[in-house]
Amino acid sequence: MTGNRLPPPDPLGEQFDSVLEAAASGAGWAAERLWRSLAPAVAGYLRVQGATDPDDLTSEVFLGVFRSLSSFSGNEQQLRSWVFTIAHRRLIDDRRRVSGRPSPVSLESIADRGPSALSAEQVALGRLSAQRVSRLCEQLVPDQRDVLLLRLVGGLTVDEVAAGVGKSPGAVKALQRRGLAALRKVLEREGVPL
Amino acid sequence: MTPSDDYDDEMLRGDQYDDAAIEALFTGHGADGELALLAELAEDLRSVVSGPAPAPSPQLMAMFTKGISTNKGDVLVTAGSVAPGPAPQASGLPRWRRRKMLISEFLLGLSVAAKAGFGVGIAAASVTAAGAAGALPPAAQHAVSTAVSAATPFSFPDKANERADFGKTVSTDARDGGVDGKVVSDAAKGQGNGLGVDNRPADPGQNGLDQANQTPAAGRVPTSVPSGQPATPGSQGSTGLDRANQTPAAGHVPTSVPSGPPTSTGPGSSTPGSPGQNGLDRANQTPAAGHVPGRPAGRP
Image 1 (cartoon, each protein chain N blue to C red):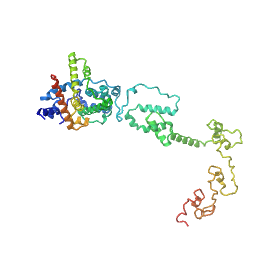
Image 2: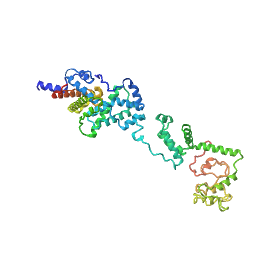
Image 3: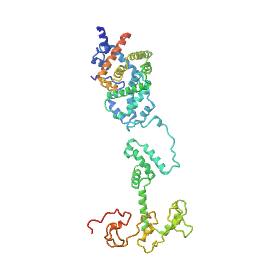
Image 4: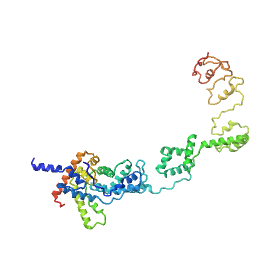
């Protein structure tokens, strides 16, 4: 079951085909358009996964994307899947460079980067959400966290996640079930109001 | 194992969640039952990771402003290449190098499509450099010169055209009654040998060998000039053979020159001057003797 997908934060929609073709032909404005559409989610994924420098790693991801863009063909959702697969593999490389266990912390900085028009209350709520998400992600084993975040943040299907992490679709389904179960148990234990 | 243990194991595995419910959770279409507890968590997660794009790196920013090269994905411009480099030092360079620099700058300014249209690639760059120096074979030099002149504001030396023009000049001179040899001789005497050495003999009695010994060939010049008479008057084959023996071919020169019609003698033996001698017999009088094929078929 492929399932429907969440729309990206800044979808290109009907402009996607023309933007993709222009970017594949080398147009800088089209590359920037793709960057603005997908970079926020990629940076958020890398940040929640504990990348050492999420912003710099995001730029590295998109440099690789644009260099190989002429070989890509597909729709907007497929491009998103492809980009997140590249991002996940760069994350793995980053982890190997650090050669330490990732620490998905410091999500508070994400809330601080929000629009300045937010009220103090909204900012405070955002920080609570960031802290909460950070704490909950720490309860997951790395494989479970990878699968859940690729699905929730990247919007990838089971098959796409399987191709990205190098596992079978059945293994991915098992990981997402166990990850959700672990999260639910943490929520029940903490008694966090929903 | 107690039923509670079974329940705990099932909970840890997530077996109570069916695939449809999980998909609804992930796609934001709401969740029922126990997954509802997680639906809001999922929304919180999406909200904290959304927001404006981060600041792109300088290399990425350059790509946005100057475009992406489609040549195998290589980026044409990097942040470092934006800074202007030092002015090219063209003065004092040989002419062919100045030409090469100008042409290289011209080609670098072309788009990828224009370069493809010219058919100029890495392999052609060496031809371009050689063409600028006039170092290609005449036919290739002419072809490169023609192509460059047609497509660029530059021109390469074209020896083929120069030689063609030289032929025209000579032809014109011939039609004008020919070149005045005395005029040429006088002019040559006044020009020297182009090496800064005045070849005009100080001693009118000097011959060409004396003059040759004043050139870089000194020491390798024959010691004497044939006076025009055979070295051994009356000997057969003296015409040219004696002079040939005074050259580096000495020792490989035939000892005699056949003076008469060929004779029909066997291979390897022929008497100069005897009738019936054919080309094979004459060939046997050369250093190829002994390797010459036998009498041609059909001949007695």
